[in-house]
Each structure stands twice: as structure tokens, then as C-alpha cells.
Amino acid sequence: MSAAEVIGDGFVYRNTRTGQTIERAERSVRLDNLDVWLCLQAPQPAPGPLDGPAAGSAAGPARPAEHENKAAWVAYAVALGMDESDAKALSKATLIEEFGQDNEEDDNGSD
Image 1 (tube, rainbow, N blue to C red):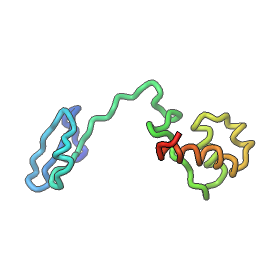
Image 2 (cartoon, rainbow, N blue to C red):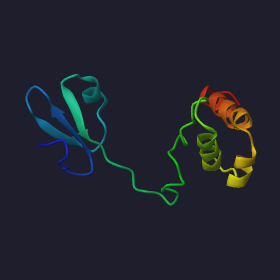
Image 3 (cartoon, rainbow, N blue to C red):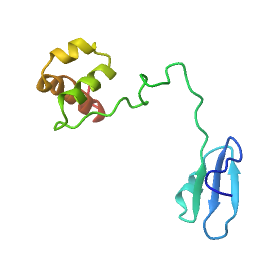
């Protein structure tokens, strides 16, 4: 079986030593932790009503690095819900202050 071949809706594992392939309905922590077992396939979640280009990932859009240009920070602010004209009116430093620090604090578990 090739890595691109899809068997079903479950998790597909292959033993890299023997070539044995198995399918599981649920993820196997044991197989995930054994070096000889490779997970070839994991089920993809069904698209929800908010999935699409504007929805971003579950963790949200990726925060630009501080050295990136203002346009990257404007796009990031817009992805987080700010009006584009308002974001363009702010300086890059203000965008970083407004959107850079808050997300870093959230990632660390601070409120």
C-alpha cells in the first residue's frame, strides 16, 4: 500500500520492518509511540460552516515576525477581525503592540 492510498475513514498504520498494514477506528497511542509503526492515514474532520479562506486555523492565523513588513501585520490584523482601512491607518509599531503581545500572552496561558 502506498502512503497516498486511502483504505477507509480510520487510522492506517504500517510496520516499517514487516510491511504489515492495519486499520484502526481510533488513534493508537501505543502504535504512535513505537518507532517501527508509521501512521499513513488519519481521518480528516468534516468541513464546518466557518471553514474556508477567512476562517483561519483552529489556533488562528500565524502571527508575523516583528521584522516583517507592515502589509503582513495589516493582513494579520484583518484576519483577527479588524477593519482593513483601520488597520492600514495604524503604524506597524501600533499593530505589533496591539496584536503581537496579546497573542503571546494567550499562548502562555495568561489572561
